[in-house]
Amino acid sequence: MVTADTLLKKIASVNNSVINSYDLTQNKFGEEVLSINLRPDKNHSNRCPYCGAKCPIYDRSAYPRKWRALDAGGIIVELYSKTVRVCCPKHGVVTAAVPWAFHDSGFTKDFDLMSTYFALNINRSIASQIMRCGWHTIMRCISRVKKY
View 1 (cartoon, rainbow, N blue to C red):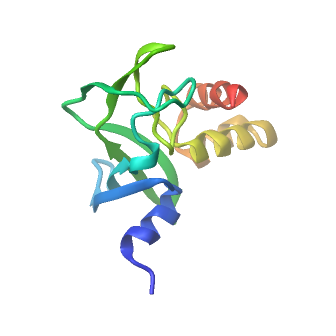
View 2 (view 1 turned 45 degrees about the vertical axis):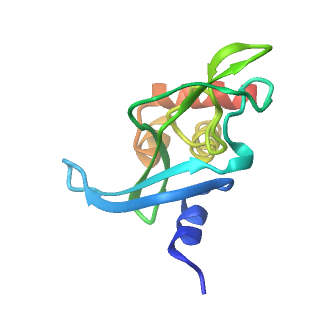
């Protein structure tokens, strides 16, 4: 039997993380939104986003940060996690990497990759409608994937 946490990890594609809580609500447009509060697991926390080194914590954020994940069956999926800044000996004080997103992105890796795929293979206005975001957002997703 599959637990709810395991199912949510598969739906949101957030491996190497621990789910703290989740909630299904409606946004102001009447759309269903699945909010998942999570954190990186012990082996993937406090990592420099540039070199991947495990670093000491510099400070912690007071508020959770939000990432948009791929929709699941028409339900918008949003991930929330409090981030930390780490002190990397090589790169200085930087926001720690999270395993589900590229550095400095408000979207999951899967969202960035899917947006890029759509942008390269179908009409841009249709890609924007499918991903529920603007074309400029898709262009930023492409720039992050190019670095990957």
